[in-house]
Length: 525
Image (cartoon, rainbow, N blue to C red; front, side, top):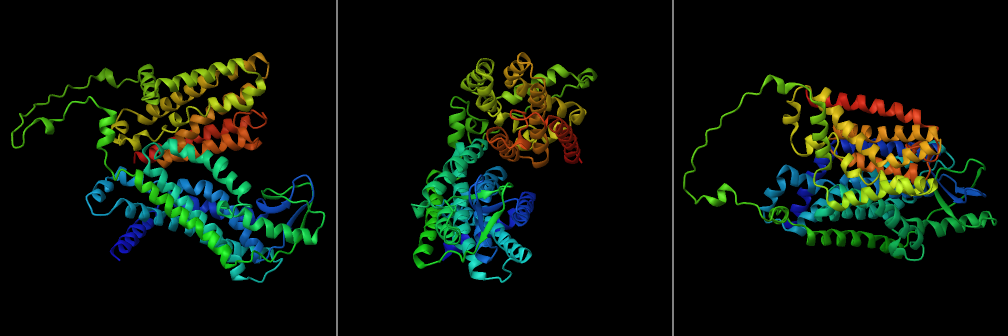
């Protein structure tokens, strides 16, 4: 009983703290916008293919609830992870973890408390989108009669279990030191789209225990209903923007029959989520930072408190401060730029430079098509963790007072930090720029330079306004994945597949820099 009481108060306190943050309000706004996109048909569930005949269910409670559930699981499962992956890290940063380490709270109890808090945060978003599904059915009015069970069952048995698994993965990533920070954010981005989603979509139909997203449980029932009404239907189910070339034919679908066996299968995801959370407790160091200190500096000298016997007085040291000469306040571009470059590259291993050099050399050597398809995107993803520190290093290392007390920090330090990031981008894209010049592709060169300006501008603005590297890491990877690798032309910031949007990104870069300046002025108030 005592353990349950601890879990309740831990989850409640953490939930209340996080729902008062701007990040929760931003995610809530995005979820409401997502509901709007589903309502106007920009994101929809349909059967068939983009090139042939397409079919969808009548907008009754069963169809609307199931469609919204699949949208939630794919998009909130992908990006909701980043919303909840900070609870343990925050305890490290604020020192609360050291206090918790002195209490009798065990590692499993602590991890379960954090997991429950994550589940509550994501569960609130699921509930709000369930209400949006009700509104959507009333607006569409194809079948205005609300059937509460048919609409809510997909959220209860498909969306919530998957959110519990995502919450567990967030806790698990935070329990492992090398997955706790920015590298873990990148790993999850690609793990979800190439691992979790792929397994669920392709194996979930035949193996219900792997049907985390819910595509399997809905597909067979929907396909049977479509086939009964349209014998020409050849199979296939898609979630996204509907095909514009042909109208989508409606059919009536009454929903999944939620039998006891089906519900038990869905509950297995909860069991998996608890298992992942408890596995994280095995790796969790319970805020013991001593091992990391020993690993990071094994030959360090003992501190004064270790040298001096207890009770022995230490000699006082008189500190004399040298007055700062007047000439030192002059703006020195070269010294400041080199200092920003050193901070940008600080701590990198030799193999990082080796990989970067290989990507730059490959940019000069590979065919242009390979350069566009793989080499250039890889070259401009490799320094991602370096750019993500722009604008937020002062917050991360608690040096705001030191940096902001320097002469003219906005006019001097902020543009130089941006310039260091742009110099790195220019270096990684130098091979591609040279190739475009040789090929006489002037617009490709303009688009590339515009994209290279966009990268540090986005990083600096997001770093200043959020105080964290996470926002840039996620948003930038989204641009790379959708714009560069999947050819969503509006997000192709480098102009690899179309050069039509480079003036827009040039303008966006200027706006981002203005926003970064406004944000820095706001920080200094």
